[in-house]
Length: 164
Image (cartoon, rainbow, N blue to C red):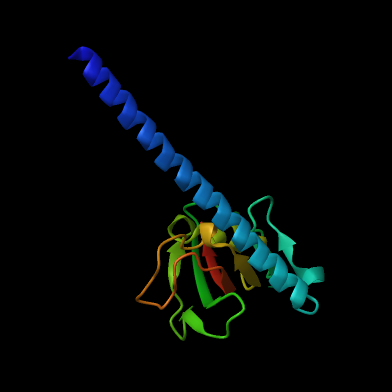
């Protein structure tokens, strides 16, 4: 009986390893696809190849449109007031925007792409962020805003205020 339980436990354990491997393989495949989408977009857009800078090894690219001013220090608890427009990369359809309402968020409350990109400017500055899905909304579709799963997004963000 003990041997049967041991064999059953090993089979269950090995089956779960395969699932974990599939998830990692899917994540890596999506990351490669996203990175290629961004690279192709940058190469096909006149002037963008000279302006877009990659943030470390993340695959997030930014273009400083206006640097802003000040010596803002950004932490996870920093509160930012922003004006923004978000589109699926390469599409002209806006899936989210602040309109005339300028929300304030703690930096820890926004998507990872924003956490990486907003500190590239200061108060009053504007930045464009090209964000792979892994640093945006990932494999989760956002039906309330019309955003499919694994969408590579393009945000223009103006930093209106910073509070530490």
